[in-house]
Each structure stands twice: as C-alpha cells, then as structure tokens.
Image 1 (cartoon, rainbow, N blue to C red):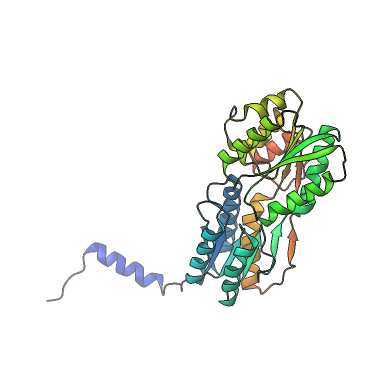
Image 2 (image 1 turned 180 degrees about the horizontal axis):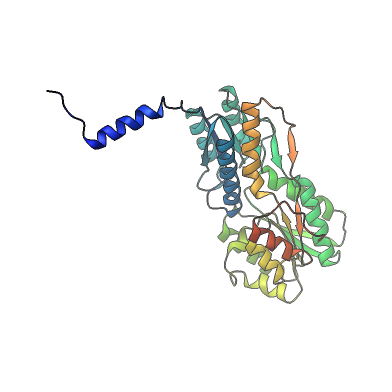
Length: 332
C-alpha cells in the first residue's frame, strides 16, 4: 500500500519542484583588515568603513566578500606578527595592515606575499616589505604642519614637549621628525621632553603631568596621538590649569568628537585629522581591485589631512553628526 505524504511535506515537495535547480553558491573572497591594537576609537571608525565597503562589494559584485578584522590586544609588534601569521595559515585572499613596527611587520608581510596573498599597509607602513601600496597621510608633512600651528600659537618662543606612542612606529616617528625639523628653525623654542606612552592612556597622563611639574613654564605640547586626552577631565590638573590660564597651547593629532569638544572649550589650539573611515573603506576597495582586477597601485597613496581650529570646529562636529566626511571643511 502506497504511503501518503503529509500536507506539509507535499507542499514543500511542490515548492522545491517549482523552484528549479538551486543557484550555485558565489565564490567567496576573504579579506583581512589588521589594526595596531584593539579598543582605539580611530581604528573602530576604520573598521566600520571596511565593513561598509565589504557589504557594498558583496551586494554589487560576483564575490561574497567576507571581512576578518584582527588586531593584537595592545600595540605590540610581536603579537601583531602572530596575528598576521595566523591569517596566512587561514589562507585569506588579501591583507590590509597598520604596522606597529616597520621591521617586525616586514617578515610576516613577505611570508604572506610569498604564499600568494597580496598585502597593503595603511596608516603605518613597512616600506622595506613586499606590500604593494601604502594608504596614509604624509606623516612627515603633517608633523611639520603641527609645528607651524604650535609656533603660531605660542608666538615663536618658549619651551615645548612632545607626546608619542610606541617607539619604532614609523608613522609616529615621521610626525615627530617633521615637527622637530620646523622647531629647529626657531632659536627661541626648545624641545625639553619627548614622552613615549606605548599608546597607553595612563602612561600618557603620567608623562604629561611629570613634564608639567618639571617645566612649569612650558609653553606648548605636540601630541602625536591623542592618548592622554582619553582620560577624564581633571586627570591632568597641571596641564588643564596652565591651559585655562592661557600659558600653554597644545596641538594634537586626530579629530575625534571628544577632541573637537576640547578644542571648542579652549583646551586645544589645533587638531590634525586623518581619514579614519577611508582606512577601512578605501583599503577594502584597493585589495578587491588588486585581487579581482589585477590593478596596479603606486607605492604611496596620500589621503590628505584635515586641519581643525576654532574657526572651523563646528563644521567638523557636523561632519561627525552626519557621517559626512566628503564635504570640504572651511579654512582653518
């Protein structure tokens, strides 16, 4: 006796028959986006850009683009090497990386290239590696611009100090070198300290306050990164008091919303901004074009910088509110 199909099974059978053969699965393209460390808001913004571009490429093209975001827990060159080697072992199709150290990063990049995985760098380079391009601002020129802004803010005379991150980070070293070049041309300005924070907030705060205590007549700070500013207000009382009194001026890298508020409130003289969204959004497009279209790129792609002062800070605040970074800022 023939067995009858239940109404549910019969319906599913008829639907499958009408649907025809299933569409073949699209080929997958796995791209890795590697930042210097976890928990840094500038990298979070770049990650969001990378995710957006991966979605756009998946929706528009023949490949299902999968994005792997990876980073060491802290800005550690050895740990970042392990992250890169893990991605090589996973046979990703392409890697975009911001290098903690140009020398330590070179070997794993070359291992990836040797395994047939194209690698590009963004934000911080490994120029002696086999990466095919570097997407960034001109850090040396940006450091020079920061010095020009600080010189103008302090009237061309006085003691100044520098905050940087991990020693050996090429992007930071280039910023500091450019800054020092300009300052060297002013006999009335002296660099009295350079503090390496290791990209650690507490070390940045401690370094700022120690320098302020040793040099109460300090006239200016150059923050090659914003690490000490992540601390709550009141964490750097000497820096804040001297700033409020008008004796101290600070020029800082990056233009995150909390920094814009500090500038608007008079704690910062000027900010040098980078293209954070593009670190991810543009990197994913570049990798895709390299892999799928075999496109050639120049060794360096200059994204340009944003200069923010009291004259155009409101425009940059609106850019963040609208997530619109394509509209040019008014002059600083």
